[in-house]
Amino acid sequence: MKISYYDSPTTAYAKDYCVSYIIQPIIILFDSLQFSVDNEWARIILEDMDTWSQDKCVEVFKDCFSYSKSAMAMVELYNQIAPFIKKTSAKKQKDKETLVSLGTINNMNRKFKDDLKGYANLLIEDNNLKGVLPFQNEGIFIMKPFDYQQKNNKEDVLIAEISMRLSTRDHIVSFDKCVEQLYSFSHYEEVENNTSDFIKIPLWDLPMLDEFDYKQLKYTRDDLHPALAPFKMQLKQLSDEIFPLQFIDENIEQLKYLCQSQLQKFVQPIQHSIDESIYISQTRNKSQAWNKLTLNLGITSVENLIQYYEKVETVEPYVANEIKRQTARYLDLKASCFFMYFEQHIIQADAI
Image (cartoon, rainbow, N blue to C red):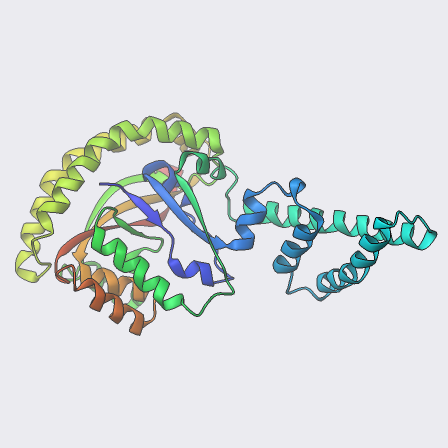
């Protein structure tokens, strides 16, 4: 079984989306991370802008800065001058007016490219992607571009993508929000202890690692994955074992026993490997307080899992109902299944 993370499909349609704080721990512990981004995001981050033609540079600049009146005014001016320059250049005319216009065009092209590079660096910095991007070449970090302009089939994309994930059962679904926080604060304790909603099994603790560069992430990942391999094999066997059991009250205790008896033996050895990993231990030692993340394994029904998508506002209620309808053709909606999520805690040094 693969432990993979897919960010919410709706992030491809949400301009104000901000990358989750768990991206570095996901890279270290999970097999892969799929990251949904705007087409223009992907182009300026992944492509070499120095190889772009002038026209392509202007086109992408227009898409990225369409919200700016001053940027659009510069694009409009470029579109007025560029045809004249191309025409006169073809005739090899070097009159004063042409040379001035040519200088203006060259300055604008440098401005377009510099602004795009600045925007790309800002996106990488704000979303803490610098240490993560090199993992694309290894197929671990997967940037999936979407066209923001094509929203007509948004619901179809969500229904097909989520239904496929649930039906194949090859990957464990992960959420970037603490499941307990999906409910109102006043009912927090009630929900946390409500075993009819989901079973929570804490796995491992680690810092947020948001300052790790690629070298540190790569080393830590390579260091920990041999220890994780037996756990994932056991998780696959356990997934096949619990799936025929419906997630209903009379099966809760059996599900708890199966999961705890088969997985508990892995928790402490892997936690020891995490604690002893050189860069993680350095991160903990250099700060008076650090943000601890707890990775939790949840067990619930397929139907509840679809409801969680609705609760984190990944899908609208009517979309969730269609996902249930389509998934029901392949799966028992009450069948037991896994999901994962992180909890964040602030730990003071004197409490460690």
